[in-house]
Amino acid sequence: MHYEGRIFRPPNEADSILLQVTVGCSHNGCRFCGMYREKSFRVRSDDDIRRDIDDACRQFPQIGRVFLCDGDALAMQHDRLVRVLEAIRSGLPNVIRVSTYANAKSISQKTDAQLVELRELNVKLFHTGLESGDDETLRRMQKPGNAQFHVEQVRRAQAAGIKSFVTVLLGLGGVERSSEHAFGTAHVLTQMNPSSVGALSLMVIPRTPLHMDAERGDFTLPDAKGMLLELRTMLERTEMRGMFYANHASNYLPIRARLPRDRDEALAQLDAALEGRAALKPEWMRAY
Image 1 (cartoon, rainbow, N blue to C red):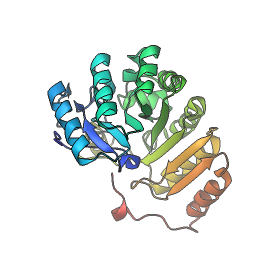
Image 2 (image 1 turned 90 degrees about the vertical axis):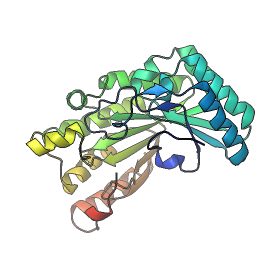
Image 3 (image 1 turned 60 degrees about the horizontal axis):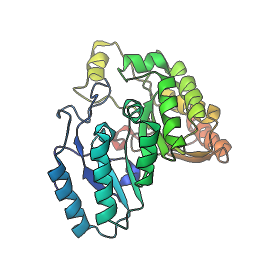
Image 4 (image 1 turned 180 degrees about the vertical axis):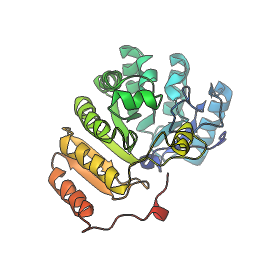
């Protein structure tokens, strides 16, 4: 299979076939993100995608999941995306789930009927980056759409039968808006009620606009305690029925909780860390 540039996928897609249908991200303007800076967005040709599907049929006939790369597969014209999904279903009959990154703007460009059609073609999960429930933080980070727009689009996907794994970034509001970011994110996650949430800790990536902000003193990243306090607020105040993961390589303390069942246990873990009774991951072990 052929890939153009670096390929990114969520941690839980480690065992999926990675099929690159687009190159880069159609927005590619979030100030904190360095994933696709070296790429200009485009949809790969039908022939190239078809060759990769044929390769997958030969190499991975028993694998049951496909993840569509890069950052914005939903930006494809709907009929082309349908043809890709039909080819996957035809050539890889063992595939029971197709997933992809799906930003709110791209979801909004699909009609309700089109979302249902995607679900009927085995698209069962969208990985959606909310990042923050605080509108001012979203604006500062140049993330398209306000918090309510993200809620509406995740709900539309859920209504079509497509589950959502929603990611948020601890520390994204900086020290200045840490509280607003944490409380706002908890409120928005409650409105979304996604099947899963992944909380990552922001690491300022060199050569991104946010890195330049930090170098000028215009953005200050919360320290480890600040990150844990944000996570505690989110866990305490998010009312949802699903998994809340904070076990990414970037996080200081791995947390995995099914809400609401495991809330008290997770909060006790965080309190132990905040009080110095539990060790945190050292900086050298953290990763993007």
